[in-house]
Image 1 (cartoon, rainbow, N blue to C red):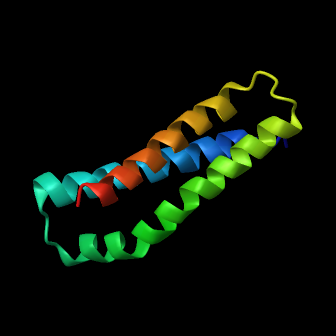
Image 2: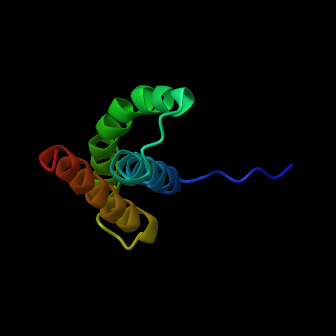
Length: 98
């Protein structure tokens, strides 16, 4: 049985994409759609704070991984850094525009 190991850069990239997607859906719901379903509100309340706190932590892990590999070319780590930076700026801009 051949089990391939998923690299930590791919996991960080996937989590960063999920966090950015969640924040984008949260923004669209609050500013455009205005869905008032109870289940959507429950998931928003449960996931917003962990999602916002997870982004800087993932960014630090990604930068630390690049530092350990002496900044060799790693497209997943650089993509994760870009996506997480965009997500953090998006999170901050949502607080400022309120």
